[in-house]
Length: 252
Image 1 (cartoon, helix red, strand yellow):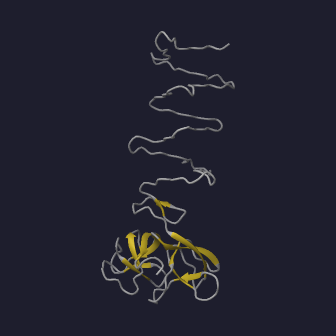
Image 2 (cartoon, one colour):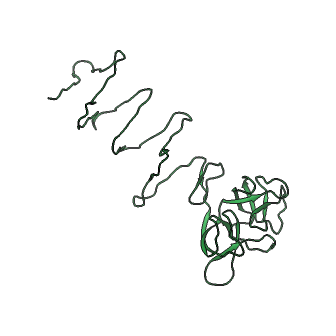
Image 3 (tube, one colour):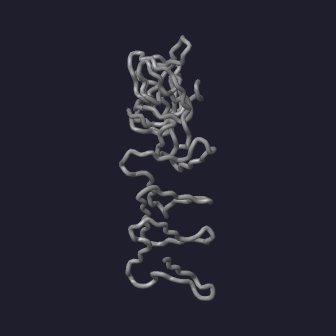
């Protein structure tokens, strides 16, 4: 037999659990049942507490006909999928039109990673090449030059001893002889920069050293013939965490 508590249209609203500190439990008996709160015609269902916990022994669905807002007040963190376990976290799909994701002060740097830095939000332009060993495999973040001849797009590590190297971009993946590699050829690119004429810094021009790294030529306003890139965000010398752009325009 059901028990119904309703609001008398003539009298005041009904209140449950408004006095004392005793617990108030609804539907806690261990049996299969549907527990419904509210109705599609209800103006609002308001849940307030110092802490609110929603647990499900199976799937959980949050759905809304209108906008769905998830936020915190101030700088409190928003955590999604942070459990240390292998899982798939899906945002959007490929068949229902475009989605816009606002990153704030983060941006995608190579099509795969999102870096928590503050330069303009921009993606590097990526191209695929066949990597020819050229005497050495080389790490992501190193400059490469094209291999002349043949019908395929091939590249190898740039050698700074030759000022006429026609650098085409920076490796976005490790170069191993005979494999395909991703090469950043435009936009803001992640690279290995090293100290040269003094410690590297934002705005420094770079040449290519003998191992394909970008070497700072220091704080100067004069570009030399071997100046290839300009540092827009200085990382750690010798590590693949600096951000650079072409000095003389993309793909020169």
